[in-house]
Image (cartoon, helix red, strand yellow):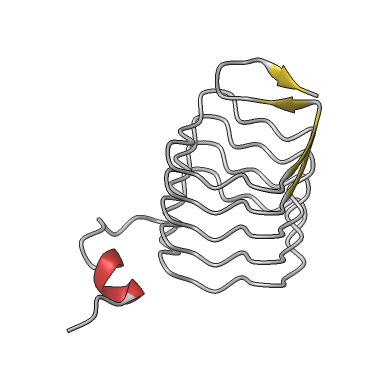
Length: 121
């Protein structure tokens, strides 16, 4: 039996903001506050998330392909195995974030703060 997104989220502790597996693709969410939210396997493909706050959020396995993440905050967020392929990461802050296994192919970097604090031109 194939594993579904819902199955992968079933073991998550219910939190105040549990958006595990939710579809936010293509939405205009600039400035949204997703701090400390559970966003495992969420779909943000092509969404506008400029200036959004993902501080401490769990985005393990999330799809942020071609999303606009300019000046968004991912401080101490878990983006392990997330797809940021083709995303706009201009002035995005990933300080302290977990990017292990994340797909950053074709992402646009400019003054992006990486997990170790270095600025990626």
